[in-house]
Amino acid sequence: MRVGILTGGGDCQGLNAAIRAVAKSLMLNYQAEIIGIEDGFAGLIERRVRPLSYADCSGILSQGGTILGTSNKASPFNYQGQDCAKAVVDYYHELALDAVVVIGGDGSMSIAYELSKLGMNLVGVPKTIDNDLMCTERTFGFDTAVSIVTDALDRLRTTGHSHKRVMILETMGRYAGWIALYAGVAGGADVILLPEFPYDIDEVVRACKQRASDQQYSIIVVAEGAKPLGGKLSVQQTVANSPEPVRLGGIGEALKHQLEQHLQAEIRSTSLGHIQRGGTPTATDRIFATNVGRYAADLVAQGQFGQVVVQQNNQLTSVPLAQVANQSRGVTLDDTTMITAMSLGISFGRDDLRVDSHSRYLVSNS
Ligand code: F6P
Image (tube, rainbow, N blue to C red):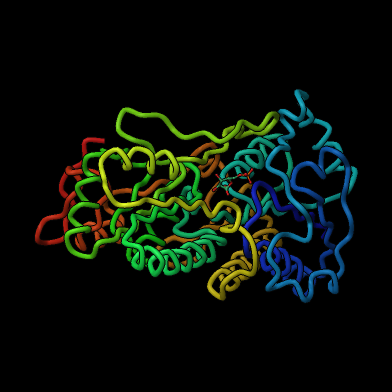
């Protein structure tokens, strides 16, 4: 067997652990030859690949980033204005690949789905700090990002407490609030603002004032995709030629200015940005990336193509790429952590998000 591996989309912690697991499993158990595809789908478009030896895949388990490189600007279906999909399929056949393992998020899985319809044998492995891939309870990278944000919250808490300030922390996550929700709960935030539930500024003010009468400082976590009720997303920039051109950012500062009109306390805003995606993966992410990588290798060996490895009910399984492509998974009111946060009185900037005495969520107008 001759199998290609690529990492697509934004990088995250655990990519090298996954590459290692896919490659080692295929080499050790199926005597496969591994071809590393450079910079995601760009490598297939620009014909940049290299053989990966067993040694190349050793000693990389704990490394952040990806030894193969990645790109979130290279779709074969629209590469600098050109449709290169047919050339990519031709190159795949020229390389005599039996399959390609695509380690990616929703964007990469959507591309993989389209390429699979053109006859390429593809297997997906779920990664992204955003944790927003459909059909899976987890993606690797998420746990590490949550740990980084939680650590930042612990630090903001001590300085916020000393100065009696309102401390705002903006997280990544695109249109999903998973990082903000999980880190907010882990870091004891007073207010968590998510893209899924546009916030009412009066409710945020109310929560900060209530907190001020008690602890005199407040911690607010705001996801980059959050927006005020009736307001707009905060867009930082638009990246030309990217399948997902919008880059979010700036809601933390915008919220600071909004709150300054209503609160006497000093307010400071911090944005962690790409720090959330860098550095070594947590043990949890290493193990999950290794498990999904090994599972993907088995799918390839069994000829089960057009599938993505997912975790459902705490078990690894796979679903067709079609079920994952062109969709994303946001926070819902029935999520356990969401219910817990509401039960503990964390404000989501809404007066209509509540739980009853049995921790059942009540209403949402969104
Ligand atoms: O999808 C991962 C992610 O880090 C998002 O959370 C964020 O919105 C985006 O990628 C940032 O993209 P870039 O690395 O192109 O700035």
